[in-house]
Amino acid sequence: MSDPSRPRASLRTAVVWDVLKDALDRRVKATGRESLDVLDTGGGSGRFAVPAARLGHRVTVVDPSPNALFALERRAAEADVADRVQGVQGDAHGLFDVVERGGYDVVLCHGVLEYMDDPAEGVANAVAALRPEGVLSLLASGLGGAVLARALAGHFTEARQALSDPDGRWGEGDPVPRRFTAEQLTALVEGAGLRVGAVHGVRVFADLVPGVLVDTEPGALDALLKLEAAAAELPAFHSVATQLHVLGETREAAEA
Ligand SMILES: C[S@@+](CC[C@H](N)C(=O)[O-])C[C@H]1O[C@@H](n2cnc3c(N)ncnc32)[C@H](O)[C@@H]1O
Image (tube, rainbow, N blue to C red; front, side, top):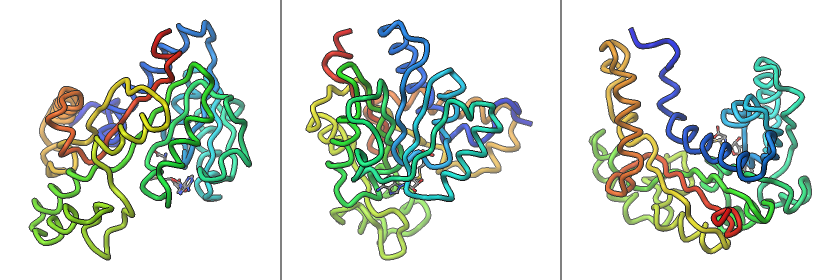
């Protein structure tokens, strides 16, 4: 039996959460403020927004989906942080129709660029929402991870299609509209005027390992989480990760 305090879902969030929590803690120290203003664009049901609010931060979630915002409200209430989480219906393209420009210490943009017609505009808007000393947490689907997963499932033609497709899609049935390499994501972050603080590969092995190995072997989940954490930092594994996380900092934040 795996440790119940480390449920399997943590394989999807652990690496990103560790990087994000560390970035939030560093901002708290640098600003001297215990409670930061956090914006989660495309924050959905609050997978990261609610844990951030549990640390004491005020989180605004912008998402176009009423269902996601409803789920967010429920999740925030269950975690007893409803007073620190605000859900707003809106879109990352028209972000400043619904939130203040330059008003946030940390902006999250997780799993959203894939769905945007203009990812560069999405990143530029996220950056424009930051205070002069601010940090961007960007998470997006990785091209190489999808190629590897299709190939290991025996879908060799689809794997090759994803490699040559300009959007990294493996075919008509691919549910993800766009994937990125680490170079493309860091170029988007730098193009929007930030410094890249760190790049992490997320879910390098988790999606490739048969679930039964993780669920039945004692200690396997913990060992896999530690392996994911160790590989996440190594550039060699970025090219095969299911997702890529980039931490961007304004120049003022990087120098603080
Ligand atoms: C894969 S989910 C990720 C949710 C959340 N960020 C997380 O990491 O759990 C993608 C979210 O992006 C939202 N979304 C899609 N297009 C968007 C857009 N143009 N602007 C803002 N959010 C968008 C969806 O409604 C959905 O909640």
